[in-house]
Amino acid sequence: MSGLAADFSILDDCDALIEEAEAHPLAHVRWTPPLQEESKFYLLRTGNQFGKTWCGAGETIFRCLGSHPYKTVRKGPIEAWVLCKSWSQSVAIQKKLWTLLPKDAIDPETTFSAKNGFGGVQKAVVFKNGSILRIKTIGQDTLDLESATIHFIWIDEPLGDEGTFAALQARLRRTGGEIMITMTPATTGDLTWLRELVTSQQVADLHFRMEPENFIPMGATEPLKTEDGVAMNADWIEAERAKVLPWQRGVRCDGDWEYASTNRALEAFARDRHVVTDLAGSGLLPERVEIDVGIDYGEDALRTCGVEVYVDPSGKYPRIYVVGEYVPHQGTTIDMDADGLLEMLAVNGDRWHDIDHVWADKRYEGRTTRKNARNLAESIAKRLGVTGEIRPLIRVAKRGLKRDHFWSSIRWLHEAMIRPGHFYVDARLVWLIEALEKWDGTEKSIYKDVIDALRYALRHHWGARSEAPGRVLRRAF
Ligand SMILES: Nc1ncnc2c1ncn2[C@@H]1O[C@H](COP(=O)(O)OP(=O)(O)OP(=O)(O)O)[C@@H](O)[C@H]1O
Ligand SMILES: [Mg+2]
Image (cartoon, rainbow, N blue to C red; front, side, top):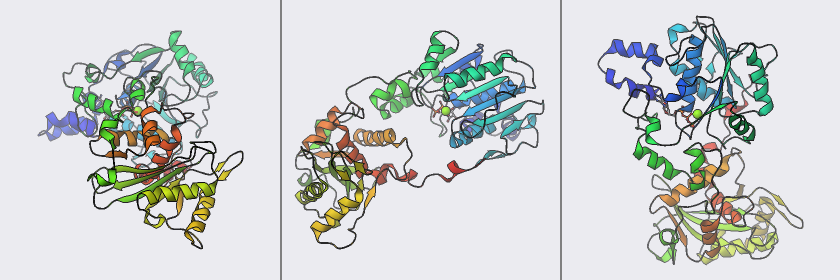
């Protein structure tokens, strides 16, 4: 909404004009060139936050209205579908559609709520000209392709596979309809099928890189603005690029098909900035810190890891001081791990009871060992002479997280490394330092486990918002 508000700002003192613009937002939005595309099947491929979804919403509405500012489209009424991959994505898209819809062109029975999107069991927008726009969520709605007569399909972020796409194309054959896909690649599954359709020119590929000129709408000189009103200019681009992990930049910024291969996932990590000899005695530590521990299990040498972190949570972003590592160079039992972890704490003069948060990997069932939070806690309790549960409890880091939390937590760490004064590692922690320098971003890397332990230690910082799984996701249609 405020993206629009930014565009309305020139109309400041003229209430009538503001009202007009709110009633007919489409007429006041400036569009980028993809809306001119005339192919039947086309793909808008860019990095994140380019306005892909916004573009798709605009295109879909123009087609439902039966008039388009940049090309000739079929006169209504038509049936259009928007395909979404999840309920939460669908609600976000419906909000964008609602913002852009000319309210006097839609049937008064079409209702909208910011929480649930369009009303009715079958989510749809009915236009006064008879056009219908249906919102479909793959996996939740049955795509009743056999009986549907569809003229236009918008797919936001790739979903489905070659088979689904072929079935959709077949549906459109009778009407001669079009499909528009808007997406940032590599964020959803294998796209080989789509690349092949592009190579064989069955789908037109509108690819825009993250360059200032691509954020300037047709006929304008100023760039688009973000929802917070920030101009998407060269400075913004630079800041956005810096936030993205280097090897993800091609995809997330430039809309490339594949992630770049690089041998350093955490590019911002630098010995001269982040590694400090005798961190505790360096004067860098604040007076009060939170003590966090993360544990990752495995069987072989270097696969079980523990990390101790001091955190100063008082500022806008937590300051991170990594002070301990437990990295056995041979396979270990749970009792050996308990000893090792207590020793890691003891080096810094800390005891188990001093810890504020302990997070561990989910249970591990190896060839010869079984490791989990419960037997680790029991082993530690035995050593401390505690009967019953130890405090703090060892919590399972992955519980309550979204399945795709991994890269967002790595980005979170990487951002801490970018922020001056927010990430330090004691020079004693040679294995962690090597891992931060050399981890290539892969799952199988020998360096990944200690990085997991570090991520887990900070779980309550980066994972705070998703601790309670969103209720709406379980909503039944
Ligand atoms: N033509 C436009 N006029 C005004 N604002 C726009 C326009 N296009 C996009 N925006 C603004 O740019 C921001 C990003 O838009 P949008 O969500 O469509 O991008 P996206 O590429 O789909 O992002 P993501 O990769 O996160 O899905 C939004 O804040 C939107 O308001
Ligand atoms: Mg989008």
